[in-house]
Image 1 (cartoon, helix red, strand yellow):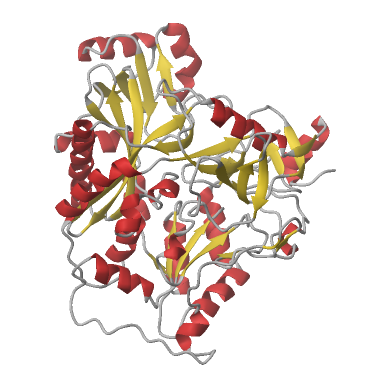
Image 2 (tube, rainbow, N blue to C red):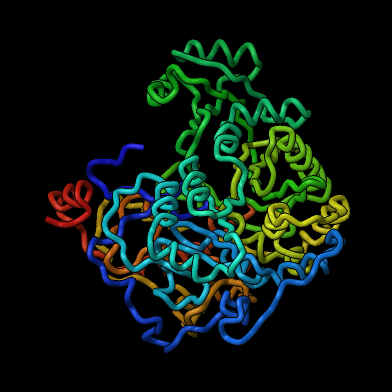
Length: 551
């Protein structure tokens, strides 16, 4: 993936391939003491046991319970993970995707390139030694972290004798697998080669077709001209108001809306010579849902609308910027049909050798009520932030715990039908939203001041103000508060498309018509106003892009 010559190199920070600016070389913000200058020491995590407690180095010897039978119910599954002995590390550019899972799983912690808490989160580790590296992808960041001497020492320190540390992440490749094998880590994810194969929209569509999971009316073909597009679309009865996708996409950047030849000409270079999916354009509501394929079947999480393409959040048309979960995301009948769609697709993925966590985009045709498969993301996703705080998660366990269970090496039984039925009923109990706030202006700027990670509230004048440092958003209880996870702080650079941070809150952030609410716009404007940055002159922009430092 080429790096633009006049912007800092891109890095992946959130669940989907969003971008992040590089830290200024030589920055010392990693060494800031874990004390907030406003509120004093930040809070600690709820009590859990470290490796020292497990191994007896501090006088406490806690052996894992002897398992003489398969785990039979939710109570036994919860107990298993609350007494878990094997450490599990989520590795990524940030800790966002699975933040808070340590509340359920003993020994679960995070290794992040960007430390949003400046060392104050007791379960987040970030290496201090960070020389400039021109990362090109999230996979490169994760591989760099796994090789880092501080990270390897940290993992060794938290791993009891005789245990093999488990590693989870969003983005990985065959190089990641080789690193983990050499270091003795267990990468608890499906094979990278299989994941890459399934990531193709063409492959997903064909697999779904094989089990009767409907996609929006489409044809998969190759085209060299607008005349080719029209001929293929007319033969399939798709009309000329079309959506065209290439096999692999990045936050909507390879989804094109085309109605005429001039529109096609603007994207012709992206389509020529490659297989494309040409779809009839429908009026739809995009719905996201996460699921886990276990040996007993597919467990489907809550459905969420997507926050997509708003200019106040992202410069990319069709770019994903967050999710909302609320009782009316889908009516009862549509929710049941969507659940069955995801279950059939998940069970079919098992025939490909897949297991574990995945995310599906579902499209609800608002004119006909039909539910279609949008696309498959065979990985942990940004929607996990909400999935892990649902009523279903608190009634049973978070969805990702079923992924951990599948890779735990223990026998278990699950009544998948009963779980899915119960979670469908509990879907009416939650209202959560989150937004990824990007830098939308075509500038490159040095960040001088940035809002800290933590809890924010409205003051008496209705202004959003910092309340206190906090570890995650799990304790939010009303729309009068929000949690902001900062990605970039003072000393970093921001440019068009770079992630500034992620805001999580109770309540909805879009109107029924899909527009941002007044409250959402106020939250976005308030967060942006807390940043102060200095634009770089053109010569320094080029220097940053080429060398990561100013001349």
